[in-house]
Structure formats: structure tokens, C-alpha cells
Image (cartoon, rainbow, N blue to C red; front, top):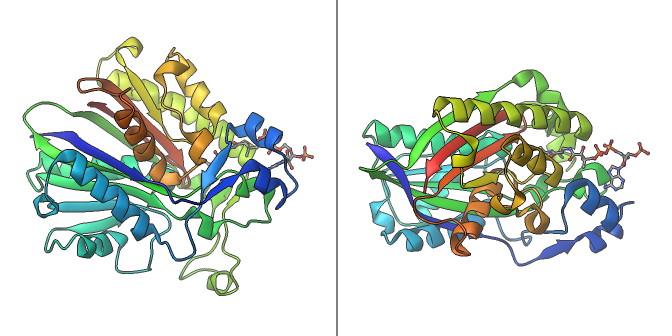
Length: 321
Ligand code: COA
């Protein structure tokens, strides 16, 4: 059994944080942020808004677009690095909000590659006849793990959620998925605290993203180049057969490097990093939903989703929309 996306949805919190506002918070400039990252603004969740709140809105929008009832869903996977609670999973919280009961629900933690991991897992559930209708979400409140006094990281990230409904289909939707990780790079991008390690940092409200940006940049560009080759080879497909690249939205320069690798003009690349910043696991489904709703992505298009993130983790999904 094949898997096909039948609906997409997304949600961004109302509050917009501009580069100009960041200039008053840290020693930075709109010019520096735009030229190094391409980011103009990002959305920030309200104090009383959680990852589950954002995910729920994206999910309802995807459910509506797919024309299904919530009760048709028989699998929920949420990719997030910023879950509401240690447990239960945010997926279980969403299940309760949707008033559906009994189906498997779990969170996936692969940082910015999380949605790619979640899609790959959902596709395997469907192809093994364990599911017929999956709700797959990427949702984050990264603003909660940002040190707003650190100019190296605070200018990069934002909050949001994106979702898809992935259904069993007799025609091919997902053509292949490719997942990787290499934990030797854990120190280059992380939050160096958790429940069982450096817990005192959490209690002291000091558990924030740390990053060696230029090192991350170099590995990301090389690794994404390799995942593009791997995906094309696995499908015996030529670069020019890809209609749209929907990349993880970390940095305009990383996105351009991947487009160049594919000999793709930027007109065929979905870019939201300028408007959303890096929303980690939410970035790919958010960008996908934007391009579906504005009519660029159409039924039958061949689309390459790719992402890279902390771990390091990286992966791709090639699909026919
Ligand atoms: N505003 C102004 N100056 C800043 C700044 C900011 N927000 N952040 C860093 N700088 C300064 C640095 O302190 C450094 O100053 P120095 O030369 O006096 O030491 C200078 O800018 C250059 O820093 P560097 O880190 O070499 O810049 P860069 O060109 O590598 O750009 C990033 C920095 C973070 C934009 C870039 O490395 C990047 O995008 N990396 C990938 C990050 C990423 O995508 N992470 C998530 C992956 S999922």
C-alpha cells in the first residue's frame, strides 16, 4: 500500500518579532541578520500558548483540507523538540483534543529533521497495513529554549506548527525516504541540559540552545548535498524531474547551496525562512502548506523535502503530491 498526502495545514502565533526589535535586545543589526541568514522576522508563541496549542490548530487545518473526520485518524506522530510535558507525549495531548481514542500516538525527537523522520515512520506504518490515515505534525515553541541575550542564537529561531494527513493510497505518493544521524556532532548544536543531566540548569532557567554556527553551517551544506545525491540515485531520477524543493528553513545560504547542487533556480524552491525564521521540526510542513495554499505546489508535482538538525540528524522524503 502506498501513502499520499491528502491535506496540509499550518499555524503561526500572532506575535511577530522583527529584526528591528532584536536590535534593541542584543548587539545585532537588521542588515547582519538579513545578509547572514535571510531572516526578516519570526513568530513567537504567547506566554500561555504551548506546542500542543500550535499543533492543534495546524492539525485541524490539515484535517479540513483532507476532507476527513478526526475519527478517521488511526495514527498520530508529532515531531517536536519542545513538548508540552516530559510525559505524556504531545501526540497523546493532541489525540485527547481531537476526541479520538485508542490509536497509537507518539512524539519523535530528531530536532530540525523531526518531521522528515515522522513522515518516514508514518509511511512505514501505512505500507505495512498498520495504519490507513496518519496525522503527522511538526510543532515547536523554540522561543522557550532561546537565550534572548545571546545574539548567536536568538536571531535565528521562531515558533510555529505544520501538519499533513498521510493516507493509504493505490497510487504512489511517497516515493522514498532516507534517514541518517551522527551523534559525534552532539556538542555543536544542543541544549546542554535535560531531565537526567544538568537538571539544575532547567531549574535555574538556563537551559538554552547553544551552537557553533559556522561549524554547523559547513557540515549542513555538505551533508544536504549528499542526501540529495542519495535520494536521486535511489529513485533513478534526474535533477530536472524535481518540480519543487521544500527544504528545512534554517538559513537562506544553506538553502541556496542545496538548490545549486540540484541546478534548481530559486523560483522552484519554497522559501519561508525570511518570514518564519528556523522553526525546527515545524519548518518543512509549514513551507509545504504555504506553497500548497498559494497554488505553487499542485497535484502530481514531484517534491523533495529535506532537513538537517541537531544530533546531527538529516534526511529526505521524495514524494509525488
Ligand atoms: N549580529 C551581529 N553579529 C553577530 C551575530 C549577530 N546576531 N551573531 C554572531 N555575530 C558575529 C560573531 O560574533 C562574529 O564576530 P567576530 O568576527 O567579531 O568574532 C561574526 O559575527 C562572524 O560570526 P560567524 O559565526 O563566523 O558568522 P557566520 O557567517 O558563520 O554566520 C550564522 C553565523 C549563525 C548565521 C551561520 O554560521 C549559520 O547560519 N550557521 C548555521 C546555523 C543553523 O542553521 N543552525 C541550525 C541548524 S538546523
